[in-house]
Length: 294
Image (cartoon, rainbow, N blue to C red; front, side, top):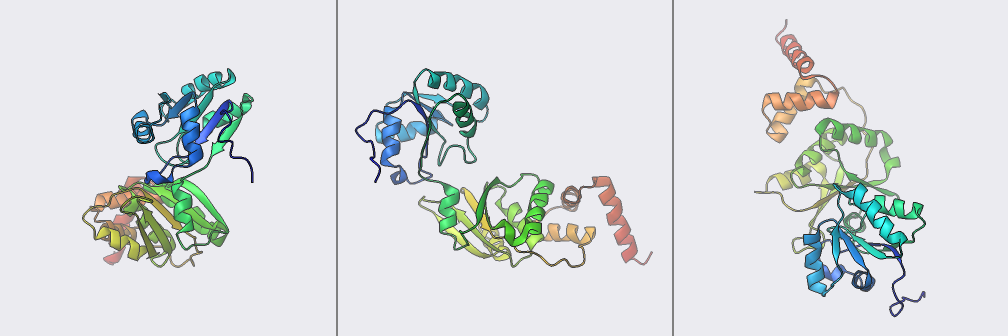
C-alpha cells in the first residue's frame, strides 16, 4: 500500500479537494490534512466553506473562486502556484470541476507545469449511480439538462436515437425544474421508461424514487412542495416510432399533464418543434378547422 504521507509536508501544487455533499462525516482524513496545511483555499462560496472550516477547526485563509470570476481568479492563483504555493480548491459540495468550478484552473496549472493533485471524496452523481440499481458497467455524467424546454427535448431526443448505446445517464436537476424534466423524459421515451430520482443524498431526508417515469412524476406531483437537490438517472431505451403526435394533441397533453394555459403550452410546443409561435398557432387553427369538417 502506498504511504499515506500523513507526516510529510504538503508538496507545492494545486489540490482539487472533494468535500461532503451533505453529511460532514464524508470528509476524508486526507482532505482535512490538505485543507489545514494549504497556504490558501479557493472556495466557490467562502460563506459555505466557512461552515466546514469552523466544524473542523481549519484556519487556512480563503478566497472566492466561482463561475463569475473563474477566468480571472484562475490566472491569479496559477501565478501563486508557480511561485511554489499550495492551493486547495473546493466547491460548495462534492468534487471540484464536476458541474462546479475547478476544471479551468486545473487546465491552466497543468499548462504552466504545476502539479495537480486530486483529493477524492463525495460526489452526488456517483453516489446516486451505485445505489440506483441501474447498469454501472457503462454510464455517463451529463451535467444539468438544458433549462429551456426545446433544448431539453432536443438533448433527450438525441439520447433516444442512441438507445442502449448511451448506457446509464446521470443528470443533476434543480427542484424547480425536476417536474418539467420528468415530463419531457416521459414525452420522449414513453410513460414506462424506468428512471431513478435520488434526492438529498447523504442528508437527513435522503430518498430514492425508482420506477416508470410517469409513476415517479405523479409521486412527486402529489406532494405539497418539491425540495432538495436531485440526481436523475435512466438508461435510454429505443422507442418504436409511431404516428407523430399532432401539434394540437401535444398542446392538449401539456395542458393536462403540467396544468399550463393553452398559450403557454403552445409556446412550449413551438419551441420543442423549432417553429415560431405564430406558425404553431396557425397550425393549431388548421387542425381544429379540419376537425370541424372544413
